[in-house]
Every structure is written in C-alpha cells, then in structure tokens.
Length: 325
Ligand code: ACO
Image (tube, rainbow, N blue to C red):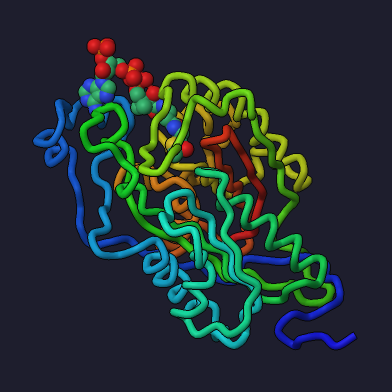
C-alpha cells in the first residue's frame, strides 16, 4: 500500500497538546452599550450572568478568526504548516456550508492536503473535536493536527431579545496536537461524551435565518444538576480525582453555572477559568480561548492536569483531562 507521507499509517500511544493560541476581534461591547440597545442594565447582566464585556467581529468571518488563532498556536508550537496533516474546527455559527471552515483555514495557513473537517455539537464542540483528533492520532491516521474552536455568534444573535443578546461574543482558540514520542505518556485523556437528545428543543439555532433561542432556566438546571457527576467521570476515566486537578476549564456559559459546577466538583484549590467575564459566551470557542489565556499568563504549570468540559445545544456534553502544554 502506498502511504501519503502527510497521512502516516501506524497507531501511536496517544497525543498531547503542544501549544495553543487565540484570537479575539478588537471591538468591545460593554453592558452599558447593550443597555442603549435593549431594556437591560449592567447590574442585571453582572448579577445573573457575570459578563462585563464581549468582543464583536465586524468584518472577520469564522474562518478568519479560526485561522488567526491557529496561526498563533502554530507559531507557539515550533512546527510549520508543512508538518500539519489534520485540521478540525468546532463551530455552530459558520453560515457557509461549503467549503468548510477547516479547508479555508488550511488555505489561509498554507497547509497542503490535510484531512480537514468541521464538527458541530454547539458549545461542547471543542471537546468533541479534540477527542476525534486524539483518536485519529492513536489510530495512525494523523501525526500533527490543529484543533480549533471558532464562533461568530453575533451573526446569529437576535439583537432585540434581551434574554439572549447580552450573553454572546465572538472569538477563536486553537491547539496544535501531536503524537507523543515513544515511551512518553499521552497528554490527552479518554473522552467522556454524550448527549440528552430528549432535551433538543431547549436550545436551538434553526432555519434559514437562524437565531440562538433557548429556555435558559432549563439549560441552567441541567448544567448545575446533571453535569458535576459527568465532569467527575471524565476525571475517573483519566485515573485521577477532581482534587488532583491544577485547573478546570468549563464551557463559559454563565458565572452562575461555572461557580457551582466547580464547587460541586470540589476543585476550589484549582485554577477555575472565568473568561466569561471579559469574553461572554463564545460557544465552542470558549474553552480553547480560556485555556490559551491561562497558558499565556502562565497560571497553570506545564504538565499539570487540566479538565476541559463543554456542554450546550443538543443537548450535548464532552470532557477530558489534558496535560497543560
Ligand atoms: N436584562 C434585564 N432583565 C432581563 C434580561 C436582561 N438582559 N433578560 C431577561 N430578563 C428578565 C426576564 O424578562 C424576566 O423578567 P420577569 O420576571 O419580569 O418575567 C427576569 O429577567 C428573569 O428572567 P429569566 O430568564 O428567568 O432569567 P435567569 O435568571 O434564568 O437568567 C440566563 C437567564 C442568564 C439565560 C440563565 O437562565 C442562564 O444562564 N441559563 C443557561 C444558559 C446556558 O448555559 N446556555 C447553554 C450554552 S449556550 C449555547 O449552547 C449556544
């Protein structure tokens, strides 16, 4: 069998995150700005959700932001575009169906002939994408990948609906993921993933001109009651307990979800990502965006265990313990 050198055959022991990068558009939308657009207030938004600012993309597309984050991750990794044989993008807000965001990123970065796919499980998309890439590297179908979460949620936001327009923002986060060397421990643990399809109608982005619509209270109750046990299972799958975690990076949906989730999981001593405050809810971009910032600020030691945990529309969820690059 002839094997394209860009798509190596032969299974590996596993993969690890080598480096990360992120991108956010320049325009900042404050709660004060929103209070001039809809009947809301800085006090309500801070109190109910914990958001102070969010970033809004004007001219940038999902692919532009994805490529900018990927470019930074690649620069931080020491690899070049020629080394990359797989690109996976998690997004639920890309308007174009074809070509997908992953091939657009490949074209912008000059990556030739990568396997390239998009994945949509809404706000848990990044953890799903990371798992599929880890599985591909374990199976020997890829060696060096870029895994991106990128969203332009403000394209699908109803700016007249105060219950949702105060929540969302735009941005992207990316990781370079490589096969571990012989004898090296894998840096991406087993994924705990699943869904609650019977709750599909509580969060939707439907139709030809879609807007995000949700029953916020139902999502809120599900997130705070059902998810702590699932997040703990992701730790168990990695052979650790939540107490061993150096950091917890959950989907940035609401500070009033993140804080009880962390408390119920028992990770008070760990660094808990709270990028929601400055970035709002960026769906599949929120976890890689928050993790990339923690790494950039050197808040988590290299090699330390970090639980990533996403949840959102579908309803879907996924999480895994990774070793901090
Ligand atoms: N400003 C002022 N008042 C508001 C606003 C606002 N922006 N939005 C709603 N209100 C009002 C409502 O009209 C209501 O008024 P009423 O009592 O007179 O009827 C009151 O505030 C309470 O509204 P609720 O919807 O009950 O507010 P709640 O406390 O539940 O907060 C929120 C809403 C923030 C959406 C919360 O339910 C939540 O965070 N849910 C989870 C969201 C989530 O995690 N989604 C999943 C991820 S997103 C994704 O997957 C794309």
